[in-house]
Length: 90
Image 1 (cartoon, one colour):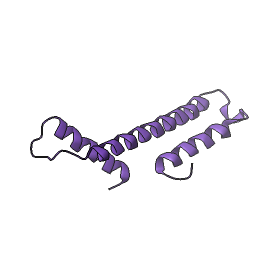
Image 2 (spheres, rainbow, N blue to C red; image 1 turned 45 degrees about the vertical axis):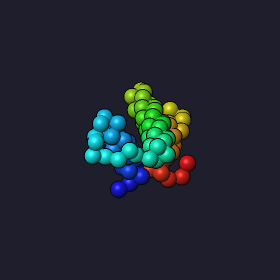
Image 3 (cartoon, rainbow, N blue to C red; image 1 turned 45 degrees about the horizontal axis):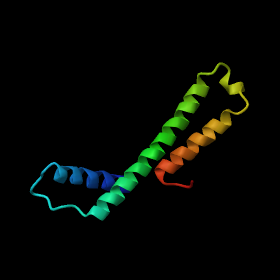
């Protein structure tokens, strides 16, 4: 199970408990806080990835995009965002 999968499971379990699943013990508040922080970070990374991907798509749809001087800048930003989501170099 990846870190993000653990975070998702922690938040799902917390939500079940919060909705009244009596079979569950109260989750550790510290663990819930960490899971929320990790989820926020993952959503921020996904937002940056989406923005970078959209910039490449927009550039692709520009007439003569291959002739535009700075297309590589958009590709580099997309690569960086993908690596960030994967947990690679930032």
